[in-house]
Amino acid sequence: MDLDKPVPLVPLMGTVLFPGMMAPLTVGRSTSMAAALRAGRAPGGMLVMVAQRDANTNSPGPADLYSVGVVGRVCKLTRNERSVDVLVESVDRVRVKAFHIDEHCVEVEVEHCPEAVDTELEVEALQRSVMELATRVSPLARVTGMDMTHVRAASGMSQIYQLAT
Image 1 (tube, rainbow, N blue to C red):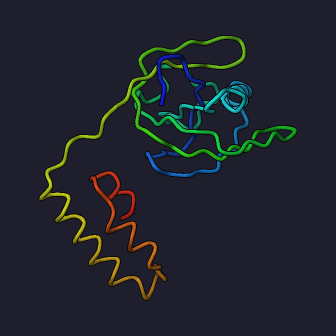
Image 2: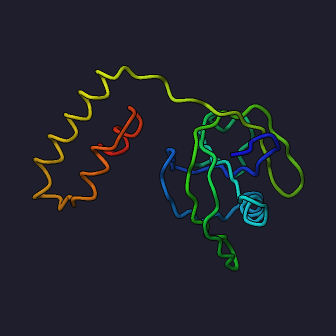
Image 3: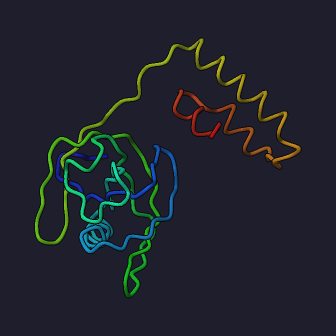
């Protein structure tokens, strides 16, 4: 994913995305709608999403946002009268380096933010623990074979955490 140029930004209210997640977002603020539409028109459709520190802030500035978020691809975009519905696939964790604010939307310069390296032993222990719990709750939660395959394939702490929550 080419992150050499500024990428449109959508602040997330009360939502956190992790790499590998698909998420439907309803975007209603004018600057966020402009960012989503700009990303949807651009080749590759990249969009940066970071959580707001306070979901009640209606016009967040750089100080109101966390510096780490995700970059994702816009998979589907539908414009409504008062909002834009966006289906995004988050691809990678990123850290915001700089903000570019114009009258329409906010774009950010970002850099890849690699996941902390986990020891193989820790990952294997967590993977076994999650597998054991998933096996115990599967009759209650209707965990499918596909879900169990995802647990077995998890390769890092963040993936295991996402599966467990």
